[in-house]
Image 1 (cartoon, rainbow, N blue to C red):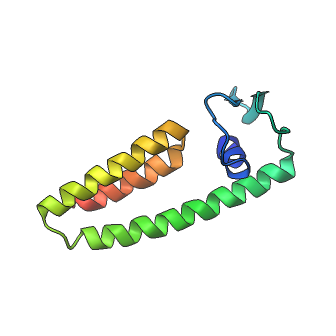
Image 2: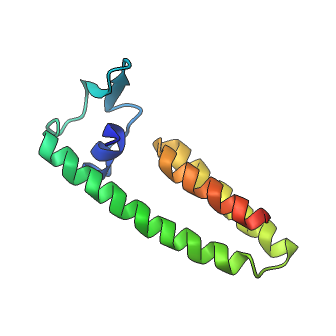
Length: 114
């Protein structure tokens, strides 16, 4: 489980750059600091958040796959516009610290460029 993503899955409005710190000292991830106004999530709540996160990612992957299929049928200008759209999504993901979404979009861009 990715603890940061699990917390975001449980508290979607949380700011991972301000409200908490997850650390990994080589022994696995742990929640080092909690600064959020709501209670620190329990292990069970984080499991729920992780499940929510995975479900959202599966929905996003399906959307990206559909878009990639459509994009593969487009011309050069349309592909350029599609890449710009994906870059905007990456920028949003960077702002929220969603590294998994960035990897998903990166894969979509590679499909567009084929």
